[in-house]
Image (cartoon, rainbow, N blue to C red):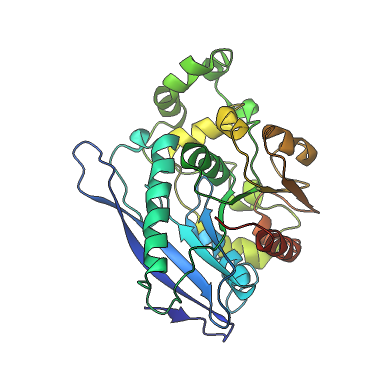
Length: 329
């Protein structure tokens, strides 16, 4: 059932269970959980399909500080007229958690995202989401990912091209070489060998299934910063989750999804904080050499978790204008 916002803002939301056809040895049927937000006083003008980054679940896109929903990407974009789908990736949040987390690869996550998107669109277009208006098939679809979620959106787009535009927040393909162990650095010259050994290297690095963020990577440090607002940092606690070790390790590699990024031709919106962990923001568009329509939005005095900073409202406005200008399917 739809859950109208108690503060009276013009949006509503609900949670949906989604099936999954992927099989893992010895596992029962798997499923995903997603939250949907939509405007209640106007037909939606587009759809954002949102995938969180490492150690975050879908609530990253709906941060709540009491009655203050200004930190919530989903609420703010719904008020601006957009339908938002917030996905818990396989193994994260309320979605199914296979016993072997090292079997969850980037390719499998991209496939799961595509299945989830197809099922959600079918429900929306046939009026099977209670309280939500029927979604027109001409709505532009935007794949939006934060950090490692950006890597997953790029992999999904390269595999099946479901999106009319991509919005990548705090993501680039340069990786985090300084954090790699010596055995991985020794394979950087041989990409095929490195990718083939990803589960092994990830297990050596993390040492357990569904590991927490390593010490030193707490939300006020890695995700926030001294300009982050205290209420936002407090709200982030609900979104904190475990890591998916193989994709997390891959995201640290230089050129993590470089071949897939080179295939992207859909319009792109790239956002980075000027104190982010993605290197120089003006170098990020070069990760996508075959995309001829790129908007780069640099957020001032902003760290990696953009929604915690005052600059977020400017980001929401700019994303709204960009998404409205996209051609539909």
